[in-house]
Length: 460
Ligand SMILES: Cc1cc2nc3c(=O)[nH]c(=O)nc-3n(C[C@H](O)[C@H](O)[C@H](O)COP(=O)(O)OP(=O)(O)OC[C@H]3O[C@@H](n4cnc5c(N)ncnc54)[C@H](O)[C@@H]3O)c2cc1C
Image (cartoon, rainbow, N blue to C red; front, side):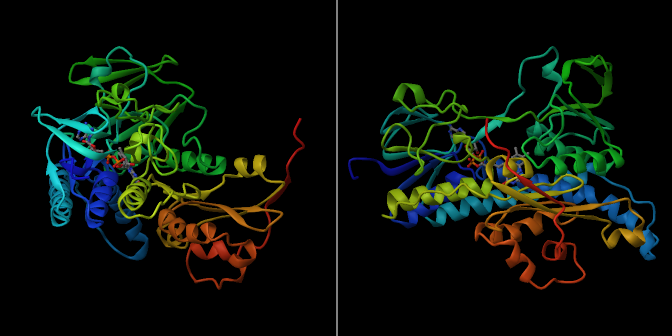
């Protein structure tokens, strides 16, 4: 590989790129990584981490309210947006430094610039300098997409800007029904905004279990978040210091902030991909095989830019597997089945495996076990909260093929349940596990009565 300046050139210093660069360097490769914005990428700088910090902030409201039933007198609480954002920014800067230091310790050369592929072995930096690489890894992530253009779209923000608003918007209108939309709905509402969610589909959280979707919607509405489905924002106008969102249904919504959380587009434009012959998949991402290799033999792609499962742990796993495959002498495909996922909305969702609808269309027999109850914590607080736990079981093999939870701690519970699902645990294994009392999760091992059982209907 000595004909080249480096063994590996990584485009993008996000979750996937950083992991791939570090592991490749540890395998002995000479690695250069280009990052055009900030090391850490979406997750660290304007995704998972800052989002979760804002979620924590938003949940104090309910804690203060609930404390009263437990004997506490909490003086009128006051919230300061600027303090939260400044503290969040400080933590993000610390993390960015930690990621940079980790790469430097691994002897990865970081270049803070945009990089573009010129040919199968050459990358051009912003300065015009060209770097010859034996392998190129595209880990360029994605960017928020605003969907079809509408009048006034320039007044809308995406999640990128939501992390830096100068003040908390008194009324936020959020278009989108996915996890980013619902998480920001919970954040703004918890911090004190009036929030309206607008989603063009028939119900929010497409792709999640239908009962989960309805449960979340009902609970969000109970908590004062308005949800409009079956319509979308048709235009945004400026009305003095405020905005006005006009919906396709004709409804006019005055707003201080209109946010679009309508999906993300893989960062494939202007990277030199078509010129070098890197093919795209139907989903708009870079097309790759199970080892993340593109249509050009020495160019690989991982993470959101491939638009497979757009989550940080998946990008990290793909980056690690790439490095092991190419530089570690250990070909490692990534298993994309049973990836657990969470929505840090209010109420929170955790899910892994098949939904009831998916199981009923794929399995000969599907058994459903469900528990819905008022959590113990809500008794003294008087909070109107209900937890949903649902197990989807293959009726022929007794395997638990899906676990869906809505309520406090759902994401933490599902991370652990995902181990059992991945290990192909049966419902009998769940039942044989002693309950841990008193917890919400104990219901996972004490649900004895099927709430439904379905045989697959014969195909036409
Ligand atoms: C608001 C929000 C919340 C999220 N919450 C979660 C969550 O709770 N859990 C979870 O698992 N996932 C979450 N995600 C998704 C997660 O952030 C992504 O899946 C993950 O960051 C993908 O990693 P990546 O390495 O593929 O890309 P990224 O992290 O996006 O990194 C790509 C990097 O490449 C850089 N880049 C792009 N083009 C070039 C170029 N030509 N030259 C140089 N640099 C370039 C970009 O600046 C960027 O830093 C969230 C995303 C968002 C937007």
